[in-house]
Length: 130
Image (tube, rainbow, N blue to C red; front, side):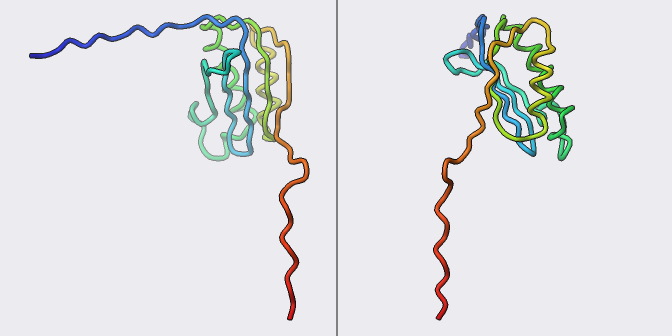
């Protein structure tokens, strides 16, 4: 006897204010939009949009990623954005400019959260010559 499977309907939550995490490395640009609790709502990257190889790390790819993220975040009712920038890649500025230019968002805060070492690792000891 076959059992009937019940498919649950996915509930889209409405998030008026969110946090956009932009991780820009020398190889890729990843943008994640999360609610204030930190749960990811939408994300995208240059690789997910179809860019391959060295084209993933271009500012143009980062601009298209920000456009895609902005369009999908508006479906969740996002009005206010805090932007957290991380990394030193070329897509950091381009994605920030595109998020500012996209309609429907009010950017309240821009913060650079790139991790920097305070003192770094311990240096190796000197070699002993006999």
